[in-house]
Image 1 (cartoon, rainbow, N blue to C red):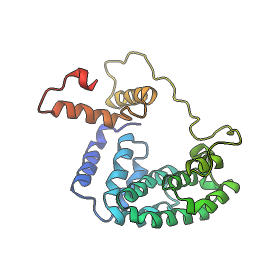
Image 2: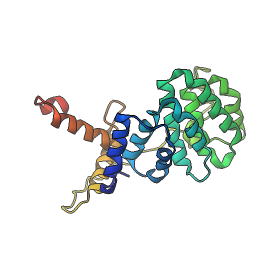
Image 3: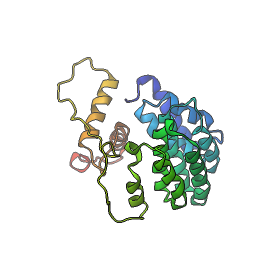
Image 4: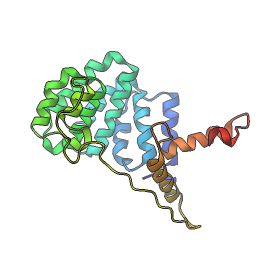
Length: 238
């Protein structure tokens, strides 16, 4: 999904916060993840804005991950805040890893997808100290392999093995297939939301790791080209 016209004010307010400095109380911003979980642009912006609060964002985010009233999706998105804060404050890595490891040890299989995202986050933080807890969660069936891969994937990512010894089961992470976007002509009365959705479909299907990933990035590119004090030829930016 993409941002609707009624959400432009919120989007620019978040960007202003990121520029001016995110307030210490990030709880309302974390709660906004639930409200805007179907909004591509919001989900790109909010974790960055919240992470601007730095160390002050860690405890509220860890607390939000335990909020049973919030969806697994919005809670998994909050994990992005923690990785961004650790990137800015490496000395907080151990504290964040401990908090996530404790959470993973406590949550049952009903939160398998969230647990999968927690494992993915721990792997990204190279949390070898959490190996026993992660392995136990896998053995007890509390982790969705569709999210984080199987145990051998975790070991490979952490550098604990050089190659697989067993074939992957169906449903492992990365198996999703993106459908080709529609090539049907658009009508004259197409809405902005439909235009954004069509653009996003093309970016998802034809994009690469080095390409623009979403409509927000495309908008930023066009804005930069339009605002440049010197003319940038299409041959340079197309």
